[in-house]
Image (tube, rainbow, N blue to C red):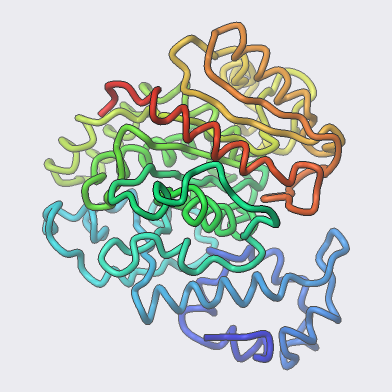
Length: 407
C-alpha cells in the first residue's frame, strides 16, 4: 500500500492508478501538481502545493484513492460495476445466478471517458468484503463525536442492510468522488449500517435525461440484485451533493418515465432478456432522498452552471427540472441541509424544497446551518458538523416505516 512517503510519480506509474485514479480522485485536482513536483513525496507536495481554494494539496485523499484502486485490482475487495453493459457485470451477467459466487470482477474503467460504457457503481465486492468502505474508513470520515443515530447492534449485526447510492456533486461538469463519495460511503457504512454504492454518472456534454437515466438504472440494478448484495430492496436511499443532489431529487419524481427510457435503451443495446425481466419487475423509486446543499430550482436563485451543463440551456426544461414544482404526496422521505452563507448554490433552494414538502405532507427534515459555504462534504469543521448524524437518525426511523410495497 502507498503512503505519503511515496513520490507522486511512483504512485502514478503503478497500474491501474495511472489510467484510473481520476475515477476516485478528480483529475482536475491532480492538475495542481506541476511536473517539477513529480519526483517529490506526497508529504512534500502537501507542503508545496495548494488546492484552488487555498488549502494544502489533499495528499491523504490522493493516497487513499490510489490504495482503493489497488484493493480493487489486487485483492478484489471492491468492484466497479458497469451498468449499461450488464454482460460485463459480474453481478448482473446472465452467466451468474443470484446465489452463485461472482467472478473476480477486476474491470477497472479508464478515468474521464464520460460515456454510457463507463457509467459504473463502485462498491465492496460481496464475495470478498461486502462492507469494504466501513473496513477501510480513514480517520477523516470518522465523526469527532460518538455516533449514536443507529444502534451498534443494527449497524454491525444485521445480515440484511439498507442500501445507499451516492451521487457526488460537481455542477454536472465534474464529479467530486472523494469528498462527496468515498468519505460519505465510509461514514454511512461504518456508522449507519448501510451497504454503499458510489455512482459515476454522465456529465456535460451529456444532457438531460442521460444523468437521470444513469441513476434510475442504478436503483433498478441494486433493487433487482438485492439478494446478492444482502440488502433490503425496500430500503434504498439515494443521496447527492450539490448537482448530485439535484440528480437525486429529480430522479425521485421522474422515476416512472426514466424507467421506461432505461428499459428501452437496454433493449436497444441487446441486454439479456432475463436482465430486462428483472428490471421490469422493479421500481426505480428510491425509498429515501438525502441532499447535501442541493441544487433544487432552475427558476430563481439557481446555480447557472448546473442548469447549463444539464440542459444545454434548452428553455423548456427550466420548469420541468425545478424539483420544488413537482413534489406530490407520494414523494419519498427527504433529508436536506444547506449553509446560509453558501455562495455557490443559495440556501433558498433548500428552503423552497422544504416549503413544497410541507405543502405535500411529505416526511422530511430540512436544516439550514449558519456557516460553511459550499462543498463541505461531511463538514466536521463547520457549523453543519452534525448533519450526517441527523440524516442517519432521520432515515433510521423513516426507512423502516416508509418502504411500503415497492419491489
